[in-house]
Amino acid sequence: MAYNTILFDADGTLFDYDKAEKFALASSFRKHGIQFLPDRHALYRKINDGKWKQLEMGVISKDELQTSRFADLFTALGIAGVDAAAFNADYLACLAFGSDLIDGAAEVCRSLSATRRLAIITNGVSATQRSRLSKSVIKDYVSYVFVSEDIGYAKPDSRYFDFVFEKMGLIDKSSVLVVGDSLTSDIRGGASYGLDTCYYNPRKLENLSGIKPTFEISSLAEIFDWI
Image (cartoon, rainbow, N blue to C red):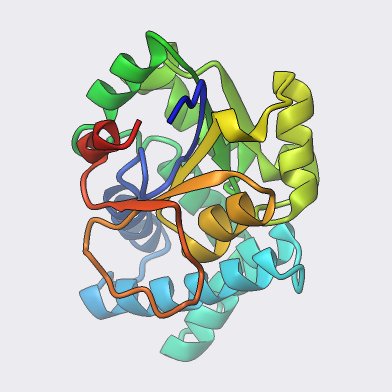
């Protein structure tokens, strides 16, 4: 398949978001004098995932997401007196240092960038994502970074992909591949726009969503089996 442009999701696809998230949460909890326990991380993740799904559906804004996820977390934990907005600011400041990559990400990006254009497509927070990329070895391999906060639309909205195509001067959809770990954001967004998609599924989770990627990989290096 002659893909000359690869659109990579950031978190959970190229960047080790689990590691960055845990560090940022633990640091922010300590700063606010709250004990950080494993079950609190799991609860936050459940709440946060729900908020991002709401963002994808256009139910809430990015600002609402950032504050309400922590307000809901502290309510669920029975913790009072914590400013959710201030906690979120501290969390994002710590998250900006999380530039660790998924195994194989640097090698894959380096190899692909020799013959293809690479871009990052992310629904994350602009300042945080750009800071993480600037600290990463893959910064030299990525030609474009598209953050929903800057664009005004989030994946899977087709207007997000309209913006990407316009800025990159893309015309032929058959030459563009979307790679991501989210079926509802990356894969649905790419497929709905008429693009081929690669579902990165390292845990080999069963896909019960009804969303069908063009192909699926469990390690990033497997992408070379398809392109």
